[in-house]
Image (tube, rainbow, N blue to C red; front, side, top):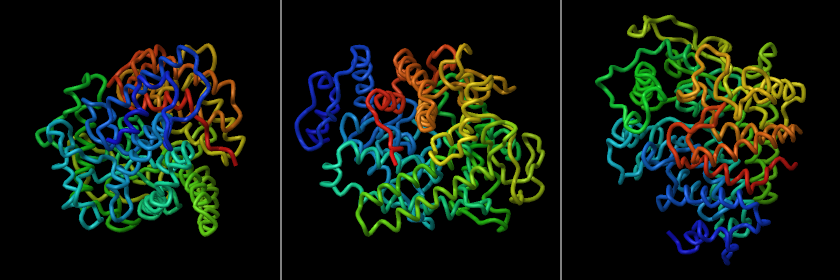
Length: 501
């Protein structure tokens, strides 16, 4: 690691003024004492989880590089070391496949195979992924995660434009981001309307959400003897997905691997395996990143103006499609659209015939926090934004005053499947609440955003930057010293938005 970067991220330096040099830490007004302590603690987490080229989510449970984690981490790192934030994104995108996909895990070859499952020998990216252009020099998974990367790249560039230009950061990363978006918009348009579909619950990022219970019921689980759950070595079983759900996750991943990670189009042999869902959060982040990529294009000069205009227009069109396809006015929020016809199976039975893509699909009647996240889009119609705020403040998510809720839960507080401790089935997460806070500010809900920001900072500190927390008490669950929790805490303390058109 270079000397300048190490100095920038050394927590001991944080209270003594910025270091000198072209990639120096941002000049900032002195923080309040409590915030200064929180800033130092968050920086220590990122310093401890740095591997030399990227940042692991946590040393024990997640010992490799994760895709959307690295985007959120870079957003926080830009306040400490813009150089390291650039390296975070460059390392991730250096493992991009030839077809444009950015894999959800980039494996560290120095980590033992049994430290995490599914491990590299499960995914077999260099062989099973060869037709899709998987890299030969690094092993990765074959699925993706939400596309937050262009938004992160724009924010990282703005943290130190001089360093960014000196390193040609934007010209190099623009090409990769453009290929990534092309992959999602063209290879994953399973519904034919322009939105990207996820083909595995892990791709949406909210792995164990009740949103997936219906679609997963079609999937025959892999037998318990075919995999080992390394996650239970580091987390309580009552906090993690059930064995049945985990077996279904493994089955979907195995099937995708065995068809060599091919993304089939509508109507071809059933297309896209047994799981294809249009998710509002995934697509809202894709639209936001298209808009960010348009701004990156403008930064690159006059020859990119046409590209910027096309991306802006695409973002506006996709926002309309998002509303047409996924908005439920009766619920006052966005819902997931299952693109497969319902097939009722017992947990041990297999489909009697291939599951076909259903024309138009069907909305899944499940309220999850992802249905609020299109608030991040400035172009969302005002009446929809107001309805989302009412839903966020109502009984299902509890952000209104007097509810006792500190952070928005990942799933409906009144839902039958609500569990404040089980992974994505009720606990609150820092990253989804950070996105909500940005969305509230985007649509003028400053008072509510300020209250959410204050709770985010308090909960992050109280929980030791936990992976997720009880939405009422803020008590931490899962891993502690979790990188995106620390990184987004830094951004809440020090950051600026990009909705400044």
